[in-house]
Image 1 (tube, rainbow, N blue to C red):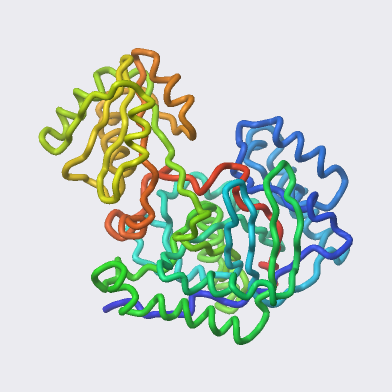
Image 2: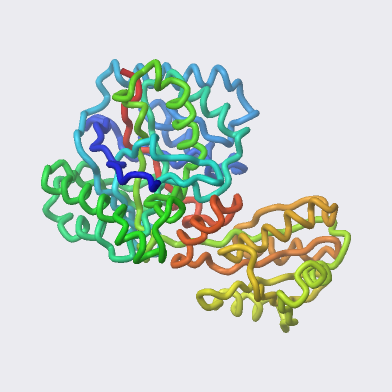
Length: 439
């Protein structure tokens, strides 16, 4: 029996900083960015100083293992309570259209709350809301310590909708000049500009809920994915912040019998973005391996035989251009090893995305002792440099193809970790809005 179409969204009650707060100092980037960059976080701390800031009510992962974590969590909860007592917030009942100006364009999102009853982060999930990447269970307990007992949530979670007909967010963009502006300011550290527009209008809210309900319909599911079953009945996929959302889910599951189904912790505040937004770039995350015991090319030929085609390229520059221009539906990737460049193409791909097929190969080979270590690389410099050692090799991956993205989740379940990055680090979501999660 198919799962029912349900109301996944709820109009939120959002807490926004009042006029006396310096918004440029208030808003800070997602906690999982710049995790090895002390200079970045030193600059943020210097910029914030003694001012109210989300820096003081979140836990940047850079500091994990470097400070007294229990004390830091105590300080976070204390600071949240202090901000509430000092009436630092104004209440906004309604969704928000978020406009983010970044280097290569303007990205839009819908800030709302989603029902955690309809979210399951396990790999075999058939829920309406699913993880895009494998969830590492060990990363959840430390986050539970932060969220458990916290009066507020401050989200950096970005959720994707496969809205190829652009019915949800784009109509809101067309009327943004008529909407009340809730905030409008430059982000720190040269991270662009952000505006928030109020969607607190019953007609607009009904329009949004109607579009989401239509996207859950059998007709919509069949048009996009070819068949209607529990696997294909998906509407949202988590782009950024999956472990934060998994933490919210774990706490809700632990306490819902005690708290009741109308508790605010049943929901989580997220920003929904359209997969098909041209300003939303899916950057590939490349792979490098260390201390390999055999040639990558020989291992691929041994493992896949006639199901893989490998050709030599003149150099890495021509290889990268070729891979970047890979047509839709073709799974080609680059290999750098022993001073040579190769283009490999899966003729019978084991996964719906090239990165998934490559990761399956690497996981299998590593389990057999084929190499010692793997790392995940943004950009090309390290891809080139690391492969210069004869014991190492690099895998240059193509851009993630948006048109096959949701189909891959349907076919394969959650994708391998480090499958893609939604833009550069400084383009990630900033903490701005808060919401009460305790009664």
